[in-house]
Image (tube, rainbow, N blue to C red; front, side, top):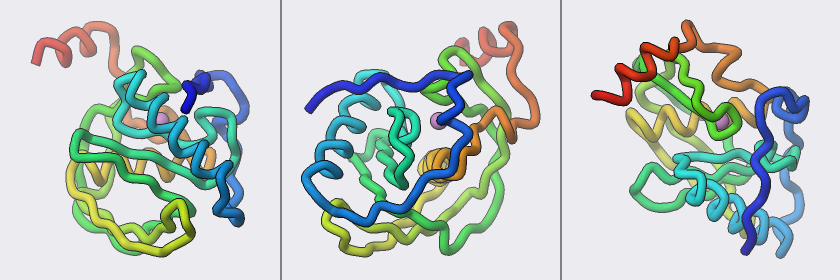
Length: 159
Ligand code: CO
C-alpha cells in the first residue's frame, strides 16, 4: 500500500467525468487500498479516484463505521433533504453549505465485480453524494449555496 498525492483545486482532472471500471484486477485492488490509506492519513471521510488522478468510477468512504469500497456506484433511490457544511480533501480549509438528500440507496460493485446495494443516512448519505459527484466531475464548490467565510469557519470549529 502506498499514499497517493491528492489532486487539489485548480487541477482540471477534478472537472472530468470518470469512466466505468471494467477490469476487476490486482491494479484495482491496489488502487482501492491506496485510496483508503490516503483518505485516512488525510483524516477524510471519503475519497474518489479522480482525486488521486485516476478517471475511473471508484470511491472509498469511511465515516468512522468501517471502510466502504464502491466501484461503478449508482444512486437508485433517495429521499429527504439535509443542509449542512461540507468540505473536501481537494479543497483544504474550505467549507460550503450544501443541500443533499438525507437518505440514499446505492447499487455498486465490490473489488471482485460482485454487485451489492448499500443505504446511507445523514452523514453517510452526504458522503456518498459528495463522492459520486466527483465521478461526474462535479465538486462541492460548484453546488454550494454559500462558501463559509473565515469567521464562519472559526464559529464552526468552536461548535
Ligand atoms: Co471531495
